[in-house]
Image (cartoon, rainbow, N blue to C red):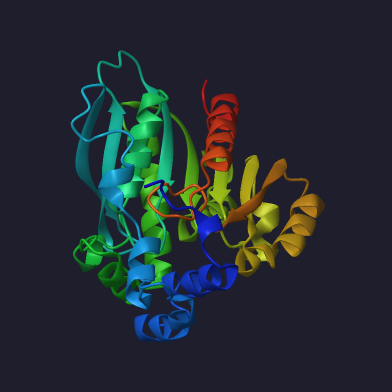
Length: 297
């Protein structure tokens, strides 16, 4: 059977799922409201399962791939939770330092998909580091529902400091040239925007995928080029773009934005039906070219 895509679902159902994923409604409310789309022997619970991530099925670079080296490393975060932990990946057999990319997850912590993204970056000849914001609470718990629940318990200010510390940790690793970029998805996209306002020239480039805008008064602090990757059907995130763009223009920030027609929030995530293969391929090609231009020495 062909893999289902976003086009196989009613847009209202996709909006409902987006609200559930991002904490706007709980599981019971989703199931109640999704019931009207459950026809032909399909239940609301089955729809939720269809829309939820399938990590193993979508894995592109397996953990045992001989082309990479990987480990989980803890780092100090004195202004955050004290200690952080992340997934560190670099190309096997690298003979010289490489540019580093900080990989920032969605609002579910360091799940298998984000680890896969880090491995993909290693195969593009970068050193990748993917911190887990949930580490202070025990780490990614293994299921998306449990992860969402844990995420609500985080202290936002401490978590922001943990990502600042993670960037400094990556920058200082001997495997890294000292030049770093950041890519993030959803919550992680918003964190990339935030880091751009805090790290100054220490961040060489940022690529937020469908992430929330930073505080507009902080936009003049951005010193690196930004590439914004946006889904067309993403009203929750896109509502903030006009004001963010005006702030970027006023501050003279080097930025570009790509809007992918017909796509949903999360279109780059190949573990769910919202994945758009053509748009994701183009967005990733642009992302790697952007990092090669601005982060690679």
